[in-house]
Amino acid sequence: MARLTVGKGVDDYIASLDDLKYRVPEISGRAIYQGADVVADQIRANIQALPVQQGRSRGRRDPTQEEKDGLLEGLGIAKKRTENGNINVKIGMDGYNSDVTEKYPNGKPNAMIARSIESGTTFINRHPFISNAVRMSKSEAEEAMAAEVDKQLEEIMGTE
Image 1: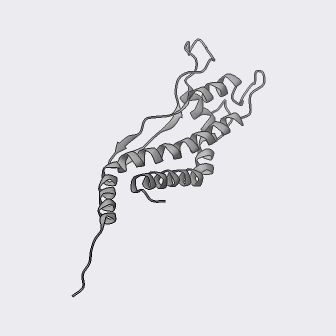
Image 2: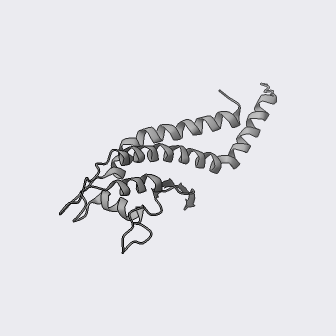
Image 3: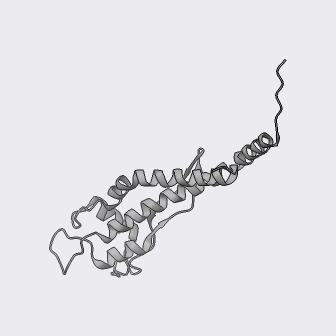
């Protein structure tokens, strides 16, 4: 009759798997933020590459320097949220820029300016800086998330 002896290594491995079960949300959240950082960096680079309107224009125009600076200052990553078992973060614009007008005494909302530049309006030229950034950085973000998951798993499981 065959005989199998299980050593201490298997017990440690099972304990690591048990620990892993409870840390999956934490690991997933860290990975999501790593991917979001990559996408946000690409959006930031695309904002910096936007053309700037020089002087007044009659008709369609490019964003002004104040609008561009406001987008750079307002760009951020929101806290992660879990909805229906999915962990999500949002990357977007917050706050107001320094272009104070009678209609906008606190400055123009950065989210409004971002939407206007992204889609274009009757008075602002279309420059899809967000959708292009998401498309351009997708594979790099996926790689960053996978690397973070691998790093966390190695740390928990004690393997290399």
